[in-house]
Image 1: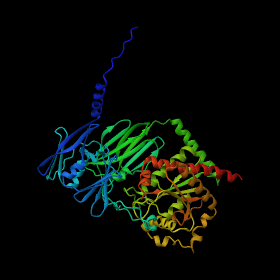
Image 2: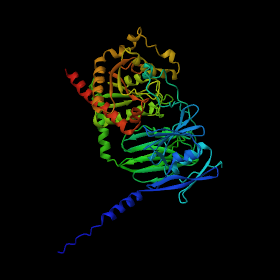
Image 3: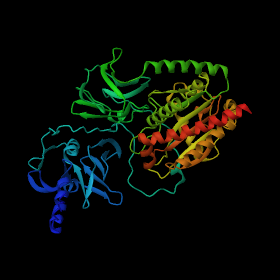
Image 4: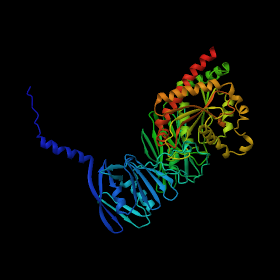
Length: 568
């Protein structure tokens, strides 16, 4: 066999090839920018077939004020009566009303904002239409000609949609955005807000989505306030279902915050495409078919996802359900029913995060995931939800549900917050039903209890939480104190082991939601929505799954210890 020796390229040729390879992935160039008849050049480059233009230079040439926080990689641009906040490496842009300092919405771009040579680059085709809407100008982007033209025409150029799945925040949100500042030394800065405000109704055609995971598939309901045509399916494959609803508006923020559990759905998002609403559903593995139709009993749109399920398995599950019912009747005190209470709901949003995330959606997402884990890994245990969708349930009704269903453990899931935002206060707390020992604990309870003001005849239905009548209010809990304490300790230890959130320990305060629950009961504050890191973790599916795992591990250990105590 003759061996052929490969020819070696001279080093100088190899050096010449390196910049060619780099330029193939990122072609640096400039585009022309025309504003008010004056033309200049704008730094730009193309990366992954996306045209990026320098927003730093655009703002300067358009006489827009900018504020840059180099240490945090953030830039704010004043566009007409708004401030637009950009963050390097992040696809989300925040639009803030400049006068009231209130978040109007958050837009997700199809690609991240990039920082190059101290200049912030935006994906031009996706970002500039937003800029045009705020500026009340027309902006035309011609990538082929390498030009951006700004004119005073009332029409706004909207390029072909590239699936900008935008979880925008509602315009009526009351979230304040404060200028960066040092953390206050005032002790009140770590205290919870005084009360909860009712959520303002918004007139979107598609207001929200609910997900119902069933044995052989999942039903997604798009809640509609008026009759609309059947959606057009723009894309349907194994991983994605993309729908378009003609002449409809959609609440992008609410859709993006849809709580769900199970494996059929990975994410749900929405965006406004001119006059049409777009809904994108990212599918999990195992979905064999899907169907989209209008609900005959309402204006809602139903999306059904089917997965393969053996008839034998379903019949086996039915037999298991019957056996569970029989076993529960035989063993009165067995830990066979766990009640999971997702805090707030309906017109009660709970705490509002600094980016607009709502406590009611996060708590429901975690609650559903905890329930799914119990049903999967503790098959002999019945799971009861005080709510499994975006419904308002009165505080006293939640404890009654737990008792009526024969609950043996009651877990109320919440998110914490401080009155001043943003805040450095961070971490997880678990509370027992007792008079609060600290001002902070009392304030947390006051905030969670303030939801009763959203209920009818609340003054007649509730006693004030005073030391004089607290003994009467907590009599139902007295027999289960040691079990409540033990679960709280186990949860505290699990949080410390998880390391994603620090545990602030076991505390006590007078939470009305725990009053009257005749079983071990605790209230979990999963984290602070007033803290950027806590909020980002709890708003993510990964963060909610982590918190659900922590709660489940606590339940599993508690169940083992509880079973042993019954035998003793």
